[in-house]
Image (cartoon, rainbow, N blue to C red; front, side, top):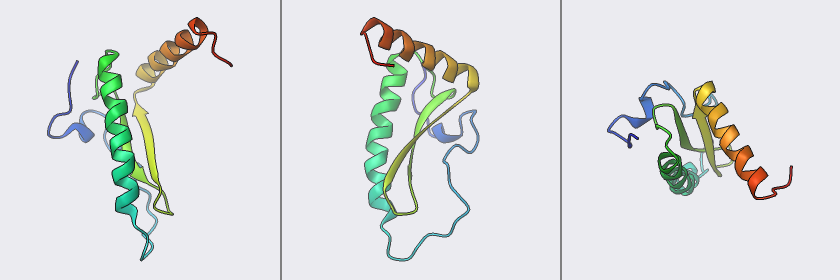
Length: 99
């Protein structure tokens, strides 16, 4: 497992921040939304690490939408995302999860 290093956002996945080319709207508090989503993204990244994923292959990224609401995006290499999907499907099957 590897943790978040100094450049964890650019560890192999390039630009995954999800920054759109739209201009920010004056008066919208994007930082508050980002802070909220950052806490959730950090928690999800700790869960990814605990499940054996590398943050250089899969990570949650904090962002904010056009209205300033927090958004957490999951970015990863396709093979790693497939592995995450299989893990979640197995968990849903073993818990009798709804599909």
